[in-house]
Length: 58
Image 1 (cartoon, rainbow, N blue to C red):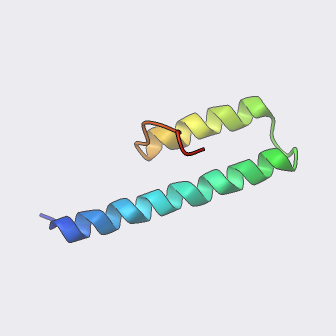
Image 2: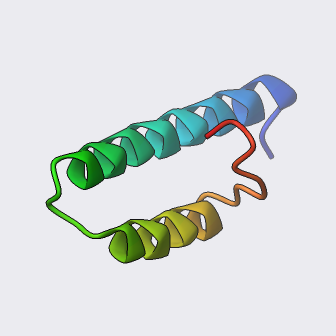
Image 3: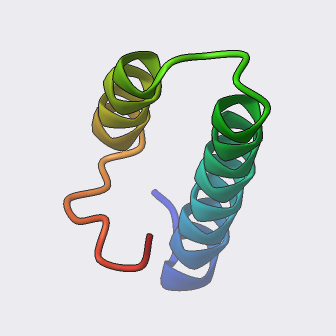
């Protein structure tokens, strides 16, 4: 069983990974390497995979 500190580290790492992937996704959209529809689809998948319930900060 993980203690609270280990759980926080995992959560922080997962949030960092999600942020990096979202940033790269935005770069691909900005460079017109993907469409808005592709961006939206991938973003929804990332949110589901990383258990992100709101994109209020984006």
